[in-house]
Image (cartoon, rainbow, N blue to C red):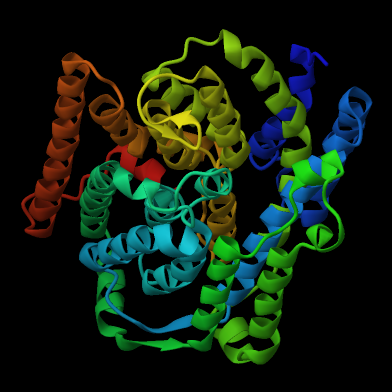
Length: 479
């Protein structure tokens, strides 16, 4: 069946709702309620699903339903388990310490997943920085580095790569992307450190004194939840679940109809919730259900309205000019506004159909699989909805009193602080011309020069050589 351009309108309306309702004075407080978000998701999603059933039959319901349940089960399990772990103590919230936090998260993300790493680190990072005036930029870089870019090295890191693994990509294949991973993380950590140095130099002296004096050693509490984390990770890697395609084709019977993976993950979460310390969860971590309820409500609408958008993409894809660079651009660009997992699979199948000479990975030319993987994982950070953990980190920060940017404000910050690094990476590692490589290294050098300038300015401010100077760019960072 042919999907017309107007079938994209429900998805556009869903994006517009997420972007506009929080910043319109008349709807701001109304939108904060989970019931309001669920209402919009259902009003837009249910008619869209009915349209999909009319177009292609019940397979639309099965496909969206299975994907949504698997998505929410993983996020819910990791959210509950991470809520039982508390990194007790309060170290100094210096740029160095904050950067170390993010570096650890960027390394962990590939092995415990971007969701697991983000949920594990966001609360202690917020607690460490509670005396700081400027905190928004730290949460934003947590989304950039921990909730997205750090997860490129293994199929456990990010859902798109896990789908690739399920479709035949060897588990160790993604390790070869270590150069791109290291390049992006080093630049992003440097960008964060220099920005935090500048903002730290402008902190009120009373806040710095308070942060310096309220220091207690770090101690991990609720450590048994780490075992439950490991169970979830093993479940993702080893235990089968529903296969929507098999169900649609009628090939799934008996045990194949049981979501074993989700049962194990939710069982681990249940053990964490009922066997863990309520004091750690509700007092130390100030645990609330609001973040996961917001994600669950919004993604009902996103998954439902996204279905015809993906079908439309499949129709127009054969007419797109496809090469290494455009595969990165199309996969990355669409991964930022569609969920990055189905976007990855769309271009995965497209590249497989193109064929070609050279090494084939699960039937896909490696020449194309590299930019598809990079685009899906890295560019999921460009909007709140590009990757599941993004909204969760935002919601946890909101609940902690951090005034996070709106949907549009976040996109502006991502284009300022993340996109230049991704462009430099693509020019160096994806493009093939010497001119492109040179342009990439020049851009990287300019980013490093900006870091050096920020650090020098911070040093001058701290030395009392001039009054604190915070440009408009940096003011936006803490709105």
